[in-house]
Image (cartoon, rainbow, N blue to C red; front, side, top):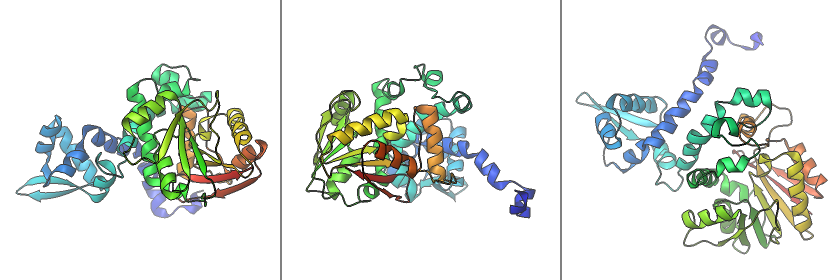
Length: 348
């Protein structure tokens, strides 16, 4: 391996050190979001001092100054000096993606990463040793109760739903337009959570009716906290594993298959296949691994997250194709979007 490294890389492991410190960089952003730094700077008419920010957010001046400087260092904030005082302001990226008020805000995703994923990853060594999720060690819940960990309180449910909602801010349009789905007149998003992806689907295909099908408590919370006045989607409560699923031309499973074992995935896909009319289909939305195991690194990291949090995994295209074909689907098409999530369309 050494012959592939430059002399500078051999003399000083810059990339390794960058990786070692990655968790600290993440926690800098997570902490700023939780404290409300980006929201305060967004609403301020002028740059603010660390003293001002600390006072407004009820933190220590010293701690806030260090946090703001670190955010400047990773190019999330800007700083300028006036009369010997450092004044901090947001970048466009921070205003667009990190403040709560933006239409493209990833704030909810970040809070979930900080308060749920981060503690789970503290038990990664045990997850690898044991080959099972770490919900019991982290949250005191039996390992098989995957979604009870996500829905163990309304606060936890809202954090998880916020995560799912944020995901489609970046990837939603690319997913629903990866294939031409205009021929499917009725579309059901199974496990569609807040309806964020379903709304993208309804915008892209205005002639189609779109339904979100999810657990009763999820549907109730979605209607209460995430419903929009101009919604063109409907919500329907149920359990796609144990109960009946609505009739549809196209079923959407977005970030669902990766949560479960192969046996449960095949059970669900066979159920969907039996509910499909001739020409009907299923759209899977997942982060596909490469067949040669060389990436994408995002999908590889996601797969480790499935280990530590659920009973599932990320898969390469061949495994999704095999699952779908064993479930009865014939034609399988794959589309890599170039973003975090890819699309797989299978028809009966």
